[in-house]
Length: 160
Image (cartoon, rainbow, N blue to C red; front, side, top):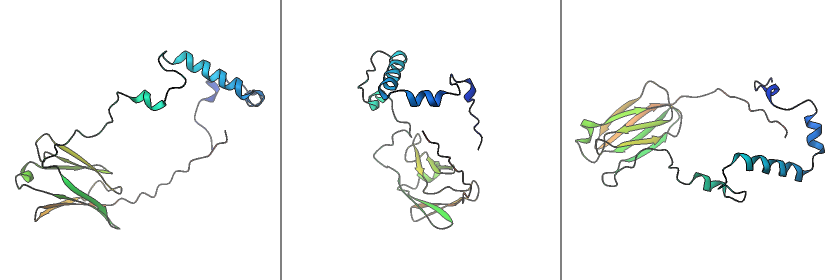
């Protein structure tokens, strides 16, 4: 398999493999520490926990949902379909309800409050078309046809 990365623009020559074999582990470590020391800010010390770098970042996700009137849902799959069942506690929710889906998520908006948005991760990939929803006895059931993805991509293992 041919690589598409432009390796010729990197500062490696044909003898780099031999040079790397002759280097001692301490020399490699010192070089890496020197380079990292030059590019990292002064407050990032070598003994720092990598997870500390991510402090202050908030995980991306859906906005928080109010604990009262929280959407109660269940997602499961059969051989041909993915089903999501949601318990609708109040009849007026149905008037404002909006349902969307991607290949792996169901998005439910405007319940219980107008500004609420719920994202439900589906247990399998679904098709773009053919979904249906029914409401019976306070249970909203969304039925989505499964998409069987038979495209495989081999990942080549390279020796280090």
